[in-house]
Image (cartoon, rainbow, N blue to C red; front, side, top):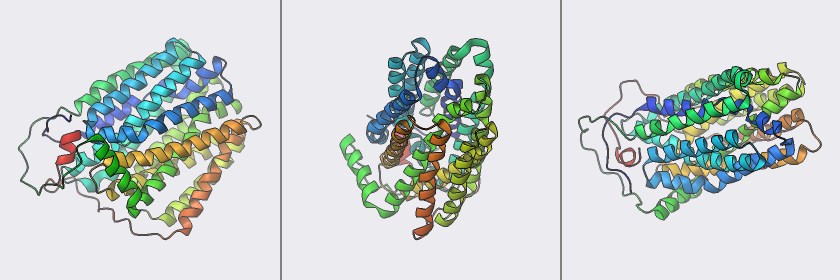
Length: 421
């Protein structure tokens, strides 16, 4: 059952903090190296990535319906706890089996977060009449995410030097554990005077299966939503090539302790791309096609240089990719009009996992004959194909609401966020 309705301003700051704690993970920069140091081959690493992706794939839409049926802040807390447990397994019991179990837990946590965080944020802003600010705020969330990962890469180097890979693991366990009470804090909001009465929203499905059916029907049956779901899925799924970047850096001759520093380049670019995405939320398909084409070419060129300087091209790709992801997510959230926002968003997440799984399996097979540089460069092919698809299709108006001032208008719908946040 959902918690009783709460009142009070939506605490965007806690969303930023939750994002920071679940992404500020020194282990993220070196876990591929941790696994290879315990005998995991590049092919086995691809299989582990596939296990991670399959778990997220299976859990994605059911977890979205959970976030539409139960309080979303509790779903986010459960996601952080699962991630924390997986990291503890990796650190305390490093072996192929523990790595697989940890990826299962991380995949479940990823599924619980996917759709839930975006829906909580959108409904929280919409309840205060600030839906038009979603792209701007979500771009800041994306920037916090990228900056947190960049900071974790920076912190990983001294941690590895001082305490080896276990030090990065235990710090990551502590940070994800702190994310649990942060998520629960989103359900505790200070009382404020109730807003003026507004028209009652249309009745929402109450049962889990009814919520699931409503979300699937909207994602499949509404053309504007379906188009936004497909674009968001493709752009998110293609970002998984970052999992191979530590291996690419070592292949290019970068010392192990300096790998996290080199990874700062793409993550800093992602932070910049997040900010840019908030300002370009209304970008059309033609502009996205040009940017993706240039980004795909930069990715391939950077990967094939065989030198650390090639990470500049990879960083350019991630700037473009994060910008495009923000635009696609804004399109999707503004297109959804039904009662199962998290479920619909999770359908996009499901599509992203399908794309990611295809990438992992393809690269895993190719890893028998190709270097990490070639594997990363191959990822540019679907990016370029997506750019061509966007350039050729009709470029409809996306009807994004105009940016709103900091002083919000009178509050709008409150039902969804009061039930779920």
